[in-house]
Image (cartoon, rainbow over all chains, first blue to last red; front, side, top):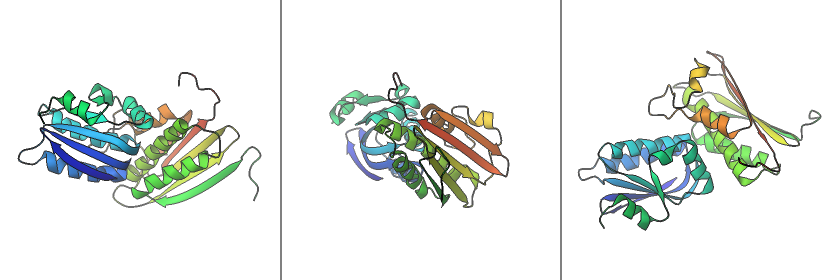
Length: 116
Length: 148
């Protein structure tokens, strides 16, 4: 799974491309954690999932782990670009109780209230 | 060879318990099942269920070593049955394992078995300590799945 990250104000925008499962979850964790543990870390995370063609509980678990790291210091996570399948897995795992879905990156940035 | 009377097709795969093989397994199963008129949502559900069962075998069955995971499928006129089996350590407490969010591995959600039971029409899980685990799951083809 390919991963691109950009800092936009107080947010980190992470765009994923591919299938998010047990095999690819490790790299996602490592790469995002490296940025979250920097000296001046982003406060919020916007996950762009529009090119994610598959997700299972391993992928959800990796997303949840990063959510907990952010929430612990008052940050928010917003997801963008969910396909029908990805939305179903989010619903099954109760993820929408923790994070919201936005229709675009612009709306997501507004939702976290980040400056840019 | 001759298949049993109501069996349209079948397959059997054995793969080492590498995490790379989870994608291969679920994709192969979805392709096999697509020989029936399942809609895309049903095939996505099937891929998740297979992914969960195979991931469980990869994570838990052989602990720190590598072992074989077998995946077999049987296609009937109106259903597909998939069996995922390993000869690993087994599930110590199956009732507990089936509870959402219980996991013996750190940092894991423990939702795998919950997803399988939610997404498939029939599920049977058998496990014996040090003998292995056998997960059988069936997806039924339905012309109308109102409300599902």
